[in-house]
Amino acid sequence: MTRRSFLAAAGTLAGCSTSHPAEEPTPRPNILFILADDLGYGHLGCYGQTKIRTPRIDQLAEQGMRFTSAYAGCTVCAPSRSALLTGLHTGHTPVRGNSGGLPLPAEAVTFAEVLQQAGYATGCFGKWGLGDADSEGHPSRQGFDEFLGPLHQIHAQFYWPEFLWRNEEPVRFPENADNGKGSYAPDVLLEGALDFMRRKRDGPFLLYFPSLVPHHEYQVPEEDLAEYDGQFPEPAPFIREDRGFEVQHKPAATTAAMITRFDRDVGRLLDELDSLGIADNTLVLFTSDNGAAGSFEPIVTPFNPSGPLRNYKGSLYEGGIRVPAIARFPGVVEPGSQSDYPWTFWDLFPTFAELAEAEAPSTLDGKSIVPVLHGETSSPPEFLYWEAGGKQAVRTGDWKAVRPAPDAPLELYDLSSDLGETANLAAAQAGVVELIEEYLSTARRDPPELPESGWIRP
Image 1 (spheres, one colour):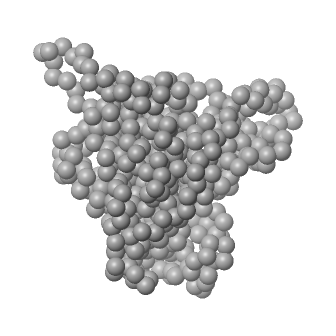
Image 2 (cartoon, one colour; image 1 turned 60 degrees about the horizontal axis):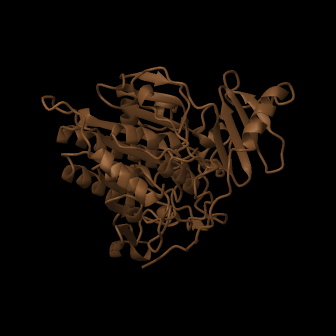
Image 3 (cartoon, helix red, strand yellow; image 1 turned 90 degrees about the vertical axis):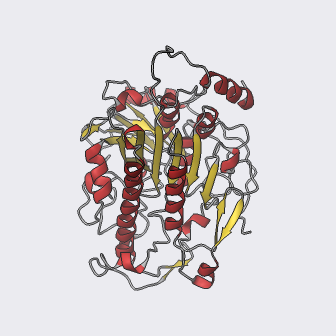
């Protein structure tokens, strides 16, 4: 079935009703999906952080379900988001490079398109990273009624930008020219998201809020920095030659301040749901696009951002792909609950489709976690698969296999007793390794050729 015919069929099914005429139909829930950028498993208080304040996200965990085995789509931004939007793991999803210029192709089907066809208002306010203004990957061509933010992921690294995109037109901030600091991008995006909720309060809506934080450049307004300034060992301001930008603030204090400020923004979104009277019919799902950045020692040492996990962003060990995740859905998710069910980004497409009473494509790699949200027992897929630049990882049950380089042998870890992946059991568990190698022989297909473009500056 082609993309167009699938969406047409899904729209027809979504319009059908089987409710008894005398029954009052249950309204379909709104979905608020909050995605942090480079937030590690250990960055939040509810996951063990002691030096960075995150009271509103910690409160969200108290009100909902905290997941201890949730996984991002990939180790880095663009392929992780491609897996998220398409419901396909990184052996199948179209965007697998992280240059910032690879777009979702026209034939891709995203969860936003399926929910849009099912009658949801769809908005994205934040970092996109799956196609610039001239591409088929633009949000407006991938199911979003409204978009505000940076399209190219490099553009998302500038916190006081000279422009952002609203749908297909630039919104300019002359006050930010020549290194001015008038309009802070996270503030602009938050206000756009709040306005969307107010206008779409009658629902149902899908609000995708992919934050820019706490990805570098590590910049935050001075009033937020004050809370943490002087608390951590800091290098003097300098130019990061590997990144090409000046570290203008003390990086450890700035990182902490960015996360606490982001926590406040999450609180504002939650407060707005309460103010509008729609919190009880809204699934709030919070997570991160990959593990914490680990290549910059001043932002790692004070915070232990991967917690008990091995390694960081860019790695297929747990610290690169296991992420914090919290779900709140009053009347469905038990407050203060915890789940170790292993789910991944590609499970969210079928989850959102089920909640929206829409039909998802049969070709998805994911499995709905709606039963898990209800606290029911559910069996995860037999295999979970990730790849990145020739590296591969597989989880099956409590076994985790990692191929750390394209031609390297598989390493094998027992996550039930070795969460930090310290003891390679491949030699002692040859049968498990053979089973995983057999799966790997069919786990992937080559990605499509995509027309890469540069960062467009209007």
